[in-house]
Amino acid sequence: MEETKLQHEEEVTRRSLLKTACIAGAGAAVLISGLKGKAEASGGTYPQIKISNVKDLKPGKTVKFDYPLVGRKNILMNLGCSVEEGVGADKSVVAYSMFCTHLGCGVELDKESGLLVCECHQTVYDPKHNGRVIEGPAPCSLPMISLEVDKSGDIYAVGVAGLIYGLRNNLLDGEGVK
Ligand code: FES
Image (cartoon, rainbow, N blue to C red):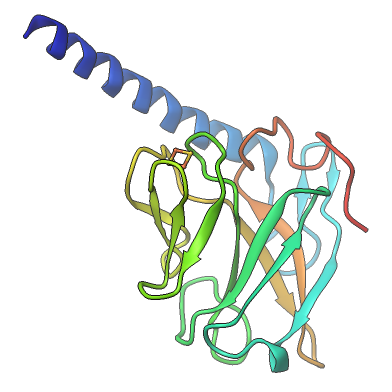
């Protein structure tokens, strides 16, 4: 009984430390100047990379892309409804890191529920609400990729809000995408 209480207290402490680390990490790594213009991070400026065009991204469609480093997969999706931080005419397009904030396993879109689910310990993230954790052990939201759409409908990644799992710096810990 005593051991169980101790384990519980250790788990609470571990989770609150991780939450603090998430907040501190995101603050240190990202400095988004609104979502317009170039986003900055400690160590440099995020590249502006074309991912898709709104014409090719119908509701329910997804596109996977590396950003801001090679091998750092993200998922772009049209949620089919207006959401906070969404871009495009309907404010329905968003993108997130596919690295779970718990231990870095892959996160995939569950087409039935429209939620992002981790393959390892089943943390569930809500892409309609800034990638926040709905259930599971992950300590913080999925990092959100900042997007911009130009007049022709081209969608660009221009920054990252949050520290990507496994990195100490979103820009410096690997080879940048071009
Ligand atoms: S690595 Fe995703 S929930 Fe554990």
